[in-house]
Structures are given as structure tokens and as C-alpha cells.
Image (tube, rainbow, N blue to C red; front, side):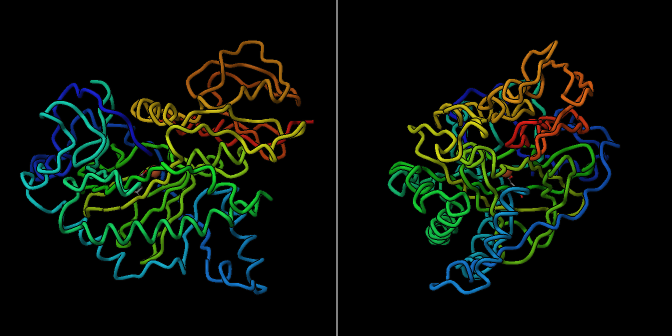
Length: 428
Ligand SMILES: O=C(O)CCC(=O)C(=O)O
Ligand SMILES: [Fe+2]
């Protein structure tokens, strides 16, 4: 995800962790506001064969033979999953452990201690940074079974250290520096794969690019099948570096309409592309839809660093990737405005990237006879080039070969994936 501005919160909420504590022994129910899906909503997710990329060969100079293999695997990962695990990433295991343990210790403190870092100004106004829930935009919003500590970590002179728990401070400082170095190593590799200048993406970030850290705490939940730890979303960042609890799963990623559980491995990092990369690569690289599910027995933690372009800048598909056969699939967007729309959409189970898309039916030259747009909740009805009928209950995927495919539909944004996975070519 990303961030949002300061907003009034309609109702004060208990942290999910407190709620989980009170639920113990109080029956099996979860409050209605957390119920996001039907009991029998989905079968268990298949384990994801998420690619593992070894950065060693890619970063060696001169490059050995294995570098080409690794680059090909990286390309596959970026084009299909938008997500990969990375080894040889240059962040020492003890440092990763220190950040994870510092975070665990923070959430284990009594509520009064954590409230010293609260994200509520004067007890009633939500601010982006600090400890608490995600922003709640309306009474009807379905809530996530998760608490967070959210901190701006870059640019360094914009840190609000008063909100940085003392126990985490040094480790977070060092972890951020190392993650930024890793991000700076990855960007040229990604640019090369698109035949862009090595510095292309780095140059887009700008001097005032900001990075936020999100520490998420998912308490055990008595009814995990009814709630989400985090609703389906794609990250609004350019790229997210994610460290997850290696002792318990919960992160799931959607690929071609199938939901996969992401396996965890101690001391690997997950690299998750965000919407900004999908836009700049004109959809060649994917910003995956993902979500977190909880479980009845164990708490779960994750630490994410969201790297984002300077909020004052605008981004659009790279000029070199757009031509007559590859029309721009996304409009120009101003980062600040895009990010502002993020939580609004997230709170309603929608994807903000839909707002950045060009009308795909127009791009594909398909005549719709009844069409009110093609984002996740709009109405459309048309016949494709092969004569198939698509109606308002269909979510569609345009495959990379340009053909259309139906996918399943559900309430919480999985259907929005359809247009998020549009391919690059036209049919016929
Ligand atoms: O907890 C996780 O594994 C994922 C967190 C996530 O997707 C996010 O913070 O945007
Ligand atoms: Fe995410």
C-alpha cells in the first residue's frame, strides 16, 4: 500500500491486538466490521512457486555466464508475478533479526506504552505516521485484522524521531540504508530488461523521493476464514521491500486469477513491484494484487519499506516503450494525487491503479454496446473479436497475446485484477 493524508476518523477503534485479546474465551465471533468474506469463500491457496533471484551473479563485474540466466529469471518474475524472493541481497541476517525482534517487542508492550507513538492527533484526527489502525474512511468500511506502526524513513531530514521506538531506532536506520542500497542495485537491472538507460528509473525518483516503513502486526484471529489481515490491494509504491515472519505464512498473491500462498524463507527479502513501476513500464512489469490472511494460533509480523517517486513529480509510461503497436495503457499521474486516492480506494476494496488506466476497450478496438467504463465496479457488456459475449458479471483478463479471458469475481477486489492484468498487444 502506501500512504494517505490527515483525515478525521469517525469512530475510535480498538487495536486489533486488543480485540484479539478480548475475544479469547469470549466466543468465536469477530465483530461484524471485520467480516470481509463468506465463510466458504475460497479453498486454501496453492503454495506459490514465487521465483527466487540470486543477486550475486547479477552484481558481479565482469558478469559471468550465470548472470544471463538470472536476468532471464528476473524478467519472468517481473512480467508474471511482479514479486520475487531475493538472496545475496547484502543485508546481514543479524540486522534483519534485530528489526524483526525490535518490532515484535514493540507490539508486545502494553497498550499504554504503544499509545505514546499513536497516529491519532488529540485522540481524534488520523495522521499518517505512528502506531494504530489504518485510516478508517467511513462507518461502513470493512476493517483489517491488523495494527501498524508507520514511519517516514526517507528523506532522512524528514524523519519524526519522536515516533521511532527507541529500541528500534538504530536497527531501522541501518536497515533502511541497506535496503536503499539494494533498491539502487535493482533499479538498473530492471531498466536493462526493458532496454532503458540504466539510470532511467533512478532518475525518475527525484531528490525528494520518500520512503515509508510499515510494521504490521496480525494477531491470531478466532475466525480467520471471515476476515483479512490486509484486504486485497496492490502497492502504490514504485517498489516495496518486504521482510515477513518466517515462522508463519499468510501473504497471498494473485496471478492470472489464481491465488497463491507465498512461501517464506528465513533471511530472504521479498521484492514487490508497485503501481508506479507498472505504469512506467507500460504494464510490462506487474504490480501484483496481494492480501494477507490471518490464522487462529499465531501472531504474524511483517516489515515493509515502500519506495516511492517524489510526490511532486508526474509519471507515465516510458516513451521508449510506447509506439503504434504498444499504445500507452496508463495516463500521466501526479504521485501526490495518486497516493491520495490510494486509501480511498483501498478502504472500499478497490484498486487505485484503475483510475490511471486508459480505456482498454478503446485501445483494443472493441465496440461495446453497453459500457460505462471498465474499472472494477462499472458496467460493461460487449462482444469480443471471436464473438464471445462478455457481460457485467465477467471480470476479464486481456492476455499478453491480446485475447480476452474471463476470471472469477468476488466482492473484495479480486475481480479488479482483471483489468490490472491487461496485456500489451491488440487482438487480431
Ligand atoms: O504482511 C505482509 O506480508 C504484506 C504487507 C503488505 O502487503 C503491505 O503492507 O502493503
Ligand atoms: Fe502490500
